[in-house]
Image (cartoon, rainbow, N blue to C red; front, top):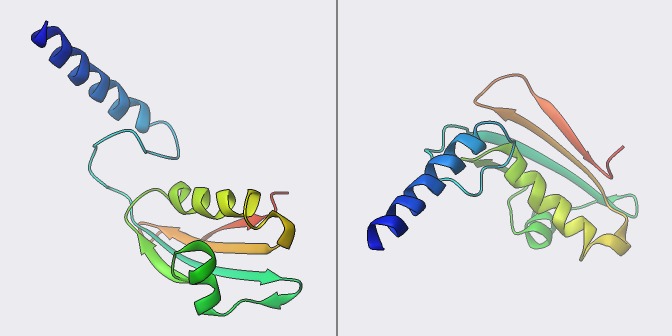
Length: 112
């Protein structure tokens, strides 16, 4: 019984590592963090740009930072906040980011 449970757990982990190679977010695998995302946030509420301190208080993330995971991790944090707590604010969010130093990409909220 213990061997079967251990084998099932190991098989699940291997399956999640393989799955994570094909999706933008990698929450359920213990694969090494092979992605580094440098990002900058520009957030406006009611037409007023938020300060660095206000952005950190809103998302619990720095306005300019680095995350050692997929950019989807930061996007999920921003989008989750805007769909729940910040929904009434109608914020405009622009996230400019680079993955592993490559070409800059842009994500915007609300989604278009």
